[in-house]
Picture 1 (tube, rainbow, N blue to C red):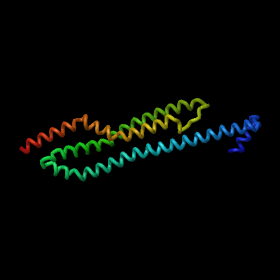
Picture 2: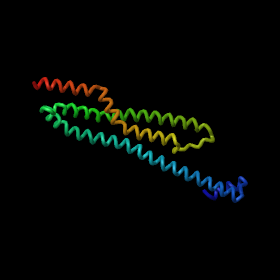
Picture 3: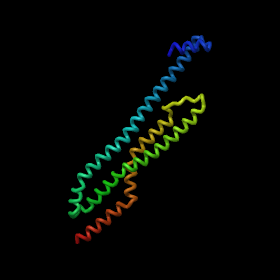
Length: 182
């Protein structure tokens, strides 16, 4: 409150107008910086939550579409030139299905990092001069890492499928189908 602030200034013996204006300027500058940090933090929190929700929504949509296309892919796979259709469909389905477990692992890592950040803040609260600030730079960097990480989930799921041998599985199925067709 401005009246309380003015009274505290008088209590401290600060009555010089230039010094009071200078302190008001410092206070105003601090309030502007705090407001800007708050806006940035809110913006990145919104993007962080939007990234997680976007990945989950896209996963659900893709799985529904792939579930509808599964029987069609199976039907086409019996014709010459379309033998790879079923394995491609299966590879895509498994890859997209893995988005949730990969996202859960990533969320667990983020939770652990956030837990460590909170432990550090609790340790800093032991100092009576420490003022907690939820919009500090470390938290904003954490949110940026989370946003980027959520959008890498499809890539990581694709790596799992590739390293799991789905490509080799597809070629083995194609060879078996071509032998059965002869």
